Amino acid sequence: MSNRQSFKSRFVRDFMMNKYLYIMMIPVIGYYLIFHYGPMYGAIIAFKDYSPMKGILGSDWVGLKHFEEFFNSYYFLRVLKNTLLISLYTLLFEFPAPIILALLINEVRKRTFKRVVQTITYMPYFISLV
Image (cartoon, rainbow, N blue to C red; front, top):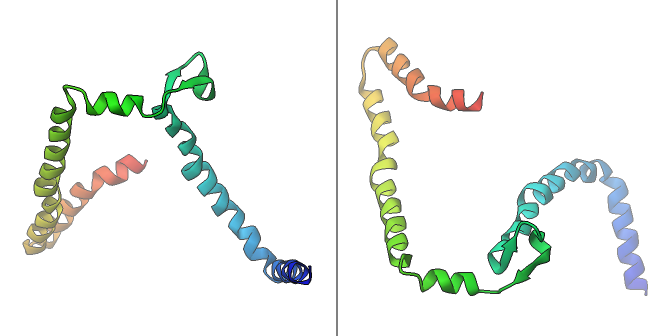
Protein backbone atom coordinates (compact mmCIF):
# COMPACT_ATOMS: atom_id res chain seq x y z
CA MET A 1 0.00 0.00 0.00
CA SER A 2 2.85 2.38 0.75
CA ASN A 3 4.25 1.93 -2.75
CA ARG A 4 0.93 2.94 -4.28
CA GLN A 5 0.62 5.88 -1.93
CA SER A 6 4.14 7.04 -2.65
CA PHE A 7 3.44 6.89 -6.40
CA LYS A 8 0.30 8.93 -5.92
CA SER A 9 2.05 11.51 -3.79
CA ARG A 10 4.94 11.75 -6.28
CA PHE A 11 2.47 12.21 -9.13
CA VAL A 12 0.54 14.92 -7.29
CA ARG A 13 3.76 16.70 -6.32
CA ASP A 14 5.04 16.51 -9.91
CA PHE A 15 1.72 17.74 -11.26
CA MET A 16 1.71 20.72 -8.90
CA MET A 17 5.30 21.63 -9.79
CA ASN A 18 4.72 21.31 -13.55
CA LYS A 19 1.04 22.14 -13.88
CA TYR A 20 1.61 24.64 -16.71
CA LEU A 21 3.48 22.03 -18.72
CA TYR A 22 0.61 19.59 -18.29
CA ILE A 23 -1.87 22.29 -19.33
CA MET A 24 0.22 23.02 -22.42
CA MET A 25 0.14 19.31 -23.32
CA ILE A 26 -3.68 19.24 -23.49
CA PRO A 27 -3.99 20.73 -27.04
CA VAL A 28 -1.27 18.43 -28.37
CA ILE A 29 -2.90 15.34 -26.90
CA GLY A 30 -6.27 16.54 -28.22
CA TYR A 31 -4.79 17.03 -31.70
CA TYR A 32 -3.43 13.49 -31.78
CA LEU A 33 -6.65 11.99 -30.45
CA ILE A 34 -8.83 13.85 -32.97
CA PHE A 35 -6.71 13.77 -36.12
CA HIS A 36 -4.61 10.61 -35.70
CA TYR A 37 -6.59 8.15 -33.59
CA GLY A 38 -10.11 9.31 -34.47
CA PRO A 39 -9.89 8.36 -38.17
CA MET A 40 -8.79 4.84 -37.23
CA TYR A 41 -12.39 4.21 -36.24
CA GLY A 42 -13.32 4.15 -39.94
CA ALA A 43 -10.65 1.55 -40.76
CA ILE A 44 -12.92 -1.23 -39.50
CA ILE A 45 -15.07 -0.74 -42.62
CA ALA A 46 -12.59 -2.99 -44.44
CA PHE A 47 -13.61 -5.88 -42.18
CA LYS A 48 -17.37 -5.32 -42.38
CA ASP A 49 -20.07 -5.72 -45.01
CA TYR A 50 -20.74 -1.99 -44.79
CA SER A 51 -24.23 -0.66 -45.30
CA PRO A 52 -24.86 3.10 -45.00
CA MET A 53 -28.28 2.38 -43.53
CA LYS A 54 -26.81 0.32 -40.68
CA GLY A 55 -23.73 2.46 -40.10
CA ILE A 56 -20.24 1.28 -39.26
CA LEU A 57 -21.01 -0.44 -35.97
CA GLY A 58 -24.33 -1.92 -37.15
CA SER A 59 -22.93 -3.57 -40.27
CA ASP A 60 -22.18 -7.29 -40.29
CA TRP A 61 -18.61 -8.43 -39.51
CA VAL A 62 -17.08 -10.43 -42.39
CA GLY A 63 -13.42 -10.57 -41.31
CA LEU A 64 -10.91 -10.97 -44.14
CA LYS A 65 -13.52 -11.81 -46.81
CA HIS A 66 -12.98 -8.62 -48.80
CA PHE A 67 -9.19 -9.07 -48.73
CA GLU A 68 -9.47 -12.65 -49.94
CA GLU A 69 -11.76 -11.54 -52.79
CA PHE A 70 -9.29 -8.83 -53.78
CA PHE A 71 -6.22 -11.07 -53.69
CA ASN A 72 -8.02 -13.78 -55.67
CA SER A 73 -9.43 -11.28 -58.16
CA TYR A 74 -8.56 -11.28 -61.84
CA TYR A 75 -7.45 -7.65 -61.56
CA PHE A 76 -5.10 -8.10 -58.59
CA LEU A 77 -1.91 -8.59 -60.63
CA ARG A 78 -2.82 -5.69 -62.93
CA VAL A 79 -3.45 -3.39 -59.98
CA LEU A 80 -0.24 -4.50 -58.25
CA LYS A 81 1.78 -3.97 -61.45
CA ASN A 82 0.30 -0.50 -62.01
CA THR A 83 0.99 0.51 -58.42
CA LEU A 84 4.60 -0.65 -58.59
CA LEU A 85 5.16 1.04 -61.97
CA ILE A 86 3.70 4.33 -60.79
CA SER A 87 5.96 4.22 -57.72
CA LEU A 88 8.99 3.42 -59.88
CA TYR A 89 8.19 6.22 -62.34
CA THR A 90 7.75 8.62 -59.44
CA LEU A 91 11.19 7.70 -58.11
CA LEU A 92 12.82 7.97 -61.54
CA PHE A 93 11.24 11.18 -62.82
CA GLU A 94 9.54 13.09 -60.04
CA PHE A 95 12.21 12.77 -57.35
CA PRO A 96 15.24 14.11 -59.28
CA ALA A 97 13.33 16.90 -61.10
CA PRO A 98 13.46 19.47 -58.24
CA ILE A 99 17.14 18.71 -57.67
CA ILE A 100 17.94 19.22 -61.34
CA LEU A 101 15.89 22.44 -61.39
CA ALA A 102 17.76 23.74 -58.33
CA LEU A 103 21.11 22.95 -59.95
CA LEU A 104 20.06 24.68 -63.18
CA ILE A 105 18.81 27.78 -61.33
CA ASN A 106 22.06 27.85 -59.36
CA GLU A 107 24.03 28.10 -62.61
CA VAL A 108 22.12 31.14 -63.90
CA ARG A 109 24.29 34.26 -63.75
CA LYS A 110 21.66 36.99 -64.07
CA ARG A 111 20.39 37.60 -60.58
CA THR A 112 17.03 39.11 -61.60
CA PHE A 113 16.23 36.23 -63.94
CA LYS A 114 17.19 33.73 -61.22
CA ARG A 115 14.85 35.38 -58.72
CA VAL A 116 11.98 35.55 -61.22
CA VAL A 117 12.35 31.84 -62.02
CA GLN A 118 12.50 30.97 -58.31
CA THR A 119 9.39 33.03 -57.62
CA ILE A 120 7.47 31.45 -60.49
CA THR A 121 8.44 27.91 -59.47
CA TYR A 122 7.51 28.51 -55.81
CA MET A 123 4.24 30.32 -56.63
CA PRO A 124 1.98 27.19 -56.75
CA TYR A 125 2.88 26.31 -53.16
CA PHE A 126 1.90 29.73 -51.88
CA ILE A 127 -1.29 29.81 -53.95
CA SER A 128 -2.36 26.40 -52.63
CA LEU A 129 -1.87 27.61 -49.05
CA VAL A 130 -4.15 30.58 -49.65
